Image (cartoon, rainbow, N blue to C red; front, side, top):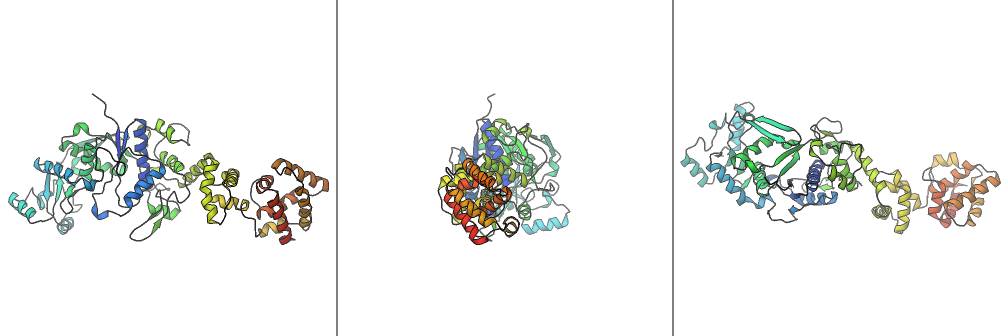
Length: 505
């Protein structure tokens, strides 16, 4: 038997911004497909017309592009299995709805929302299934003539799958093994709605996966309860032999571990749960995104990859190529993964250290412009190289290194009281004369010149160095003092020393 080509799909619904958990699902699909030289499909599941949100589809595409997940076919990519939006496949689904009805594996139901609500009031934990369907208004109960008449008169209806009770349904899961669920706990799910002529997720998902020759369905644990229904649908439609293999990923949990990660957790603890910033088209509310919060996409990918999957070694920093080589669904956890947002910051710090200084400088330039600083990229690159070890985010480089770009106008009061001595002004005036003749003005020569002068004059080394740092930086921070002087250059160093003498003496 010829082995099927690996084909996976990521199939989000455009009902709002893509959750970071959805990004992880897309990533695992991507790693699996690339490892097996397979294809990855982007399918938009927009059959829930009531929940459609304008702009959500493009947001999903932009988010996946930002983190570097590339598709082989699908919405905005093309391919021979299209269309890839479910709303554009109505006629395809209707054929299979009719097949299920013809075979007696589904039925038409006319129950109104009010009738269903009334029945819920009558029966505790009401479920539309084999034990209750004969009490309802559907084609299993009504005469065929009445069903026909109701449809001709334009009464809205749904088509429900007919599930027989007390059958053990086996779902072979690549992560969880053999999952067995008895059919008696399942309800007769709605497969199709006449109101909009669209199928529900359950039917559309099965038809699309079959027709698009999907070999593996890798999705979140929240879809596991639907899996038995999907197994039944493959059987009902005669496709059992081509049913894809399932893998249900562990949930992303709150940082405390009790429950599924939500936007509310991010708002409460101050971290994003969406890849990009999102503005709600109805309320106008803005939710933060990883990109706008200063995270590097490769850091986000690395962070997400290890939330639920273990490469079985101690390595934490992995390139995308390394992830592809070592990814294995059998190494995915069955239990949920706590969302350690502080670890996410740690990953970003690591990737900032690894990033080329020129690329990092280009990311820092817009921050500088926001603060009114225009300077050459080569200088920015030099400063970034000096200061990147101190930050988790590019934006933080301004707080750490602003003194390299703008001379201090104010001096930290506590430091002035502690470090600026009565003799500091006269000593720095002498130092200016010494430094004026220092050539070259690099770290080694400046350090040797200054220390020789201090020793020859019998001055206190610490007092001089503290006063110089205060003059150059305005606060007790920054790298080695001679690294600062070299970066600023002779003219700017002397200018700042003079300014401090004028303002502080």
